[in-house]
Length: 303
View: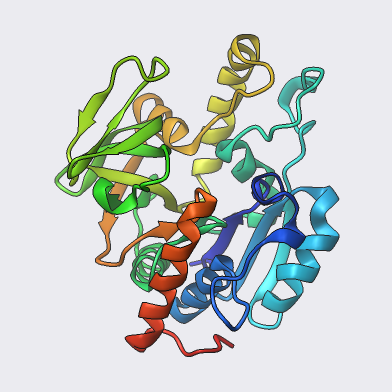
C-alpha cells in the first residue's frame, strides 16, 4: 500500500489575502492556520505534502510557508495554471480566477503519482481527529473505488459576518448518497439557510445537516473520474459565466457517484472547524487556537 500524501489547495490564497505577505498569524508564535494543518497531519502519520499554488506566487509561498514546512515533511509543489485545460482550450479573455477545486486536484495529478491522498483547503482549521481518521482510512484496506469525506454539522461551520459556501450532504448507513455545493449560506436561528436567487428567497437548513468542508480522502482512481467530469462541464461553464465559472469538488464527486458508481464513506469528528472567511472572523479564530493550547492540544510553539 502506497503511503498517503497530504494535498493542500492553496492557489486561492494570494487573491483572498491580497498577497501572501499580508497573511496574518493567528497566535503569538507567528503560526498560520496552515501550520496547524500540517502539524496535525504529521501527528496523524503523513510524511509528505503537496502544495497547489499559483506559479507566480511560488517565491512568496516558499518564503512564508513552504521552506518552513519542508523541515517537517517532504514538500512538493503543483501549479494551478489558467491555461492547464483539456483539448487545447484557451482561457476566456480577461479570466484571472482559478477554475475551482476540481481543477486544482487535477493540476496535482502528476505530483500525486498514483498515491492515495488527503485533500484539504489551505485556510481552514479542521482539528487533529479528521487527519487521523482519514490517514487510517487511506492506509488501511480501502476498497477499490471507495473514498472518504469528513463531515461537520452545518451549525458549527457558519459565520456571523456573512455568507459561506458549503457542500450539503445526504448520508445513509455511513455513506454519502448526495452532495451539492450551496454557494450562499447564512446563519438562521440554530441552523442556516441558502439562497440561489440573490437573496429573494431562502431555503432553511437544519443545524445538524452534514456538510463538506473540503476534507477528502481519495484513492488515486478518483482522478480520471474528476478529469472526465471537468472536461464535460468546462465548455458549458465557460459559456454561462466565462470569468467566474468554477468546477467544485462536491459537485464533481456527486457526478462521479451518479455516473461511475464511486462510493464515499462519511467520517465524523468531534473537533470544531473554524476559518477566516471574513476579516471579522479572525478574533474568534485567535481565541479558538488559544483555547486549544490551553487544553494542551498544542504547545506554544508547534515545531
